[in-house]
Amino acid sequence: PWLDRTLVFDRGGGWRAWIDLRRRCRAEHIDLALDLQGNWKSAFAALCSGARERWGLARSEQREPGCHLLFHRRASP
Image (cartoon, rainbow, N blue to C red; front, top):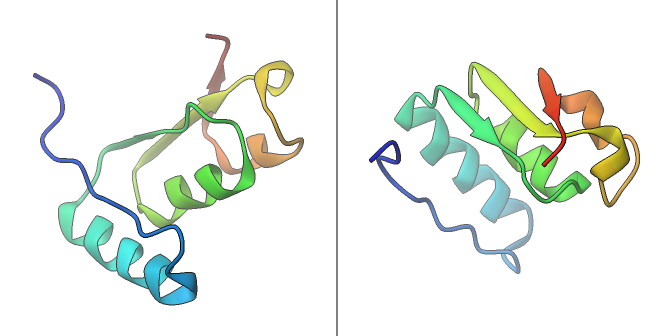
């Protein structure tokens, strides 16, 4: 009930796919982006969303170190 829409991202689409994702996300005026993968690509997708809040996994739970720097809040699963 809290999810309005799902946007599909073409992982093999290169930079054009990132630009398209950013454009579509910004048009939605996203309030919250959740990164539950804990890697740089998913953290960058959350950043591209333009969301007011970006939440991700705690440092100890991330797959790739350092991506926590792109989040406003972090939590353990």
